[in-house]
Amino acid sequence: MISICKMYEKSEINIKSILDKEDIDYSKIKQNILCAYENNQLLGFAGYEIKNNMAFLKTINVIDKTLGMVLKDGLIKSLLNMADINGINIFMVKKYDEMSFYKNIGFNDLNNRDFLLDINIDENEYLYIKLTDFFKNPCKNNKEY
Image (tube, rainbow, N blue to C red):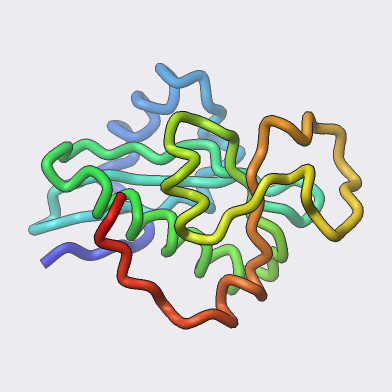
């Protein structure tokens, strides 16, 4: 059975090594990392950084490629839940090749937002989701990735 939870201490060195290769500052996201495990084996992890009470996805890394999109879906939705619990209102992701994946979850183009942005970023580079809106809607079973 796969579980998504806070990082096990034994995974920290491996995760730090991967983040170093991605040029991501571990210290800025270490409190906001969730991992997917099966039988205590790390399958993937994801983490975000907080800036101005907004979460910015910094990494989503699937180690077991056979579960690729299923793990990504579970990790991102778990991060949304954790951010909501921690009082975050807006969650941002950079636009990558997988825009349809994020838009299917409910992310929108940042340049179409209905709120003021008090941080200097390029609106064309990000998608966002309001966590209150995400949790108002019933869960979707997304079989198409």
